[in-house]
Length: 286
Image (cartoon, rainbow, N blue to C red; front, side, top):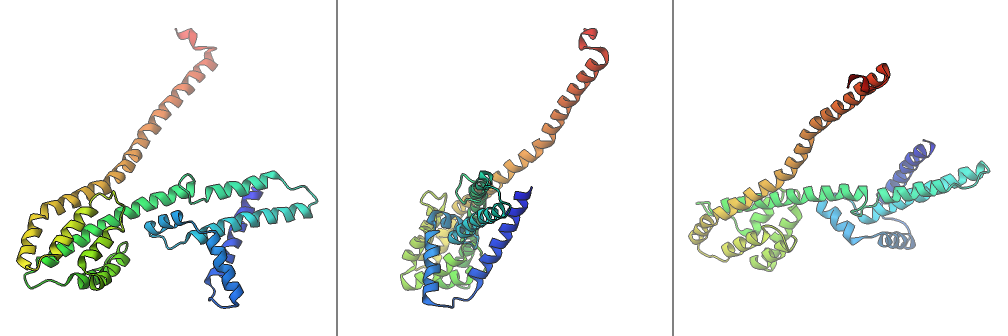
């Protein structure tokens, strides 16, 4: 219990030091700035950073690793000083506690914290796919307007503020469509998703085909022909989203049944033990 309270205290101190170090203005000597940059680079991890970015968390892999190792190092240092003042030898249990904390707080997929990040990442990916489908629906409505449609780049910039997970992608898509053209911009947008993505290839094909048409009526007719494909993409995304939720609810629904079964088994065992204790064995009733 003493080590647990000590670890909680160290986490608070490390977090306080983290706020002071990274929340202060970038002032000071050039040597100090270079030291901070070198420290950040040593704790960088591109794989973990990708997971954090896809999860929508405003964190960096460098800061997470710096905090983790600072907590572990500070804990060992404090425990060493306490043992020194008590005139006792350093316990290897303290070292195991620090290593266990590093393992639990590791952002890798095999660690508990990494598993949590993986779940958040999967949820964010589903949310991002849902926003892409919503954007495609809005784009479809924009092109089918009888009073005239908004140009692709302007439309992307206008719609960006309504989304959270694809906001930056839409803003860059808007800029690239003006600088490089709609087709190259759409190619760039599709590359922001995994190569084995379920429907981004269909979205890319629809966008490129429509933006390549100069006749608005032709584009409207093409969209009407593709409405079934868009509806199927939306339906698949809906099933994908709720299938995970359905699995969770199935487990939750099974918990009362499992608990009731275990209660019956425990009551049966207690009843048998009660009879055995009162009548010196169940064999008297056989």
